[in-house]
Each structure stands twice: as C-alpha cells, then as structure tokens.
Length: 121
Length: 297
Image (cartoon, rainbow over all chains, first blue to last red; front, side, top):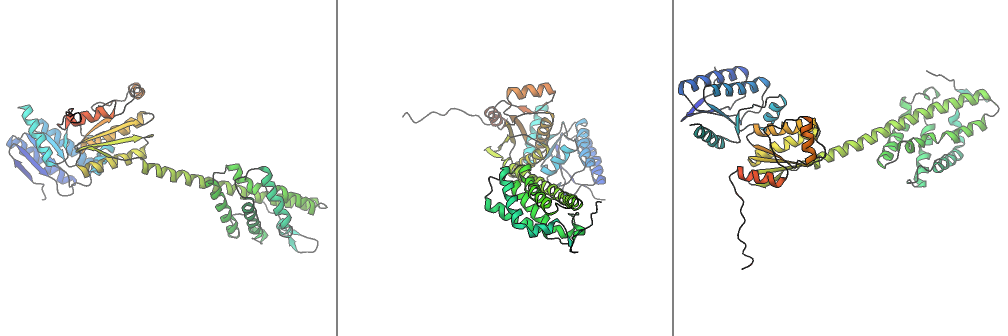
C-alpha cells in the first residue's frame, strides 16, 4: 500500500506530500503521523504541501484534524508552501484552519518551529 | 395570429402598402427624413447619413415580396432588414443615442406612410383600415426589434467597461523586499474580490513575500459582504504562510464595521498605509532610523 514517508529531523517530523492526496492515503498518513509523534515524543511537525494542487473538503478537514491531534500529543504543526488555488478552495469551503501555523517554505517553517519550541521550553 | 389577405387592386394584381412605398419612394423618403429632423432627435447625425440609412431601410422594407410573411418579422425573408436594424441600433447605442432617439427611426416613418395611405385609399375605407393596420403592425414589430437590439448594444458597452475596470483594478506593488501592497480602489464585489485574491496570492508565490498590506483607502463603503470578502483574502493569505495587514481604514468605515458587528478578529488593522508599512518592517526584523545628513557638510 502506498504511504507518505515521515522523516525524523531531530525533535521534529518532516512530511512532504509529493503525490495527489486521496482519502485513504490521507487517513493512513494521519494514523502514521500520530503514531510517530507518540512514539518519538516529537515537538513539531512540518507539513509541506507545496506539490498539492487540489484539495477537497475531506482532505482539508484531514489536515485540520491531524494538526489538532498533533497539538493534543504535544507537537505543533507548521503547514508550508500552500498553493494559491488550494488556499482559495479552503477559504471557500470555510476551512480557515485556525490554530495552524503557516509558512511560505520549509526553511521559514523550520525557523518558526524552532522559535515556537524555544518559547515553550 | 392576425391574417389579412393581400389586397386585390381593381386591376387584379396583388398589392399592399409596400408597393405604394416603392412607387412613391422619393416622396416618402423626403417626408420621413424631414419628420426625424423635425423631432430634433438626430442632430448629431449628418443629414446625408440619415438619408442614406432611411433610403436603405426603405429598400429592405419592400424586400420580402411575399405578403404572407409580412407580419412575421422572424421569417427568413426579413433577415436583411433585421440585420440592418440591428446594426443601426447598436451603432446608435454606442454613439450615445437615447432609447427614444433610436426607436424614433422606425416610428417616424408612420406619419408619412399613413398620409400616403390616406391619400391613395381615400375612396375605400375598408382598404384604408386594412393597410393602415398592416403597416402599423409591421412598424411596431420592427420598432420593438430596434429596442431589443439597442438594449443589447448598451449591454455590450457595459460589459466591455466592466471588463476594462477589472483589468485596471488590481495592481500589486512591491514596497520592500518581502512586503507587498495592494491598494484597492472602488467597490469590492465578489467577482472583483476573486481576482484581487488570485492576483495577490499569485504574487506572494512569485515574490516569496511574507507580508501583504491591503489598503482600502479607495473603497467608498464597507458592508458585511465587503468585510467578508476581505476576511477571506486575509485567511487565504495566512494559509499560504504570509501575513496580511489591512490599512487605510477611515473613521467612518471603522464606525460602520463596529455597527455592523463585523469581527475583524485577528487581522491587524491600521489607519494609514504608512503605519502598516512600519509594522510590516518591524515584523520582518527591520528598523527605520534617521540617517545623519551629509548635505550640510
């Protein structure tokens, strides 16, 4: 079964979505990610969706839920590289993803995660 | 459907008022042009051009010889006349003629035509009534057609103006490295917001900007819809990982926003573009200082 790889970088997890998301894939990712956070005690998740061209309400909700779950498990989620079309779609769907930190690219996202982690500890 | 049998003249040949038009063309044409000039509604049109148009229309009016189709202007036989009227109405609409000025082109023909009919059929009340009815029915239909085409011409003008306005309305400026500004001028409706949002987000991707300032100094009124549109743009910008500041909020607009109960919530708002720019600079870790001037030395 196809899986989206989750890369461990120090205290953070890096997830880069390079393929079109479909529902099953998103659910698998959510499961894997929460497992990893719990097992490794990660403090941050960097979700790179710059290659994601299309979203629907389900994927949008999955992103929001995954971030909320990560938060409960003690990890902040930074969403990076969202495409304009995806942003407009999410807004039109009413999914403004409150509470999720966003950044333009992975570099800025990493810096943000560091800052958030330092301010918390 | 009204059906009036073609008139049978004493000589036995079928005739109706249009044959009279052909026979007395010159006289009708003169009277028609004069009538229009008298009504004073075509002043901006050269008399020669008007006469030319009238002349052409008279030829087309006499065109469909088959009397059966005379009352059905949708008949293919009327195609050239319809096309001519459509052209005429549209060009007049573009030239800024009023609706009545445009419609009077056809309706002004009634008086000379009826005068002609009255003279020709003076001895025959039945024929006079029939032909008058036929003529008035036909001219009314053509008049309505003129109005429809006029309307269509006006709508084209409006559409093209709207299009031009949309093109004019969305410049995204680069104020500083990583700081974009979007000065909005004019009313924000859904179609425009969509374009504004797309342009802004696209520019954020292209420039990698982290802060965008939306300046609404030029937006005359803010209602709930406009506020909603603005909030959508701000949210979309945030989702893309950039920040959005709204500036240029005049006191009246601030009052409106509060009275409407619109919650601008987490959005940073500033009174002037300068304030917003200062915030943007400090957020990106820059400070502005007065440099020492070397001019005096």
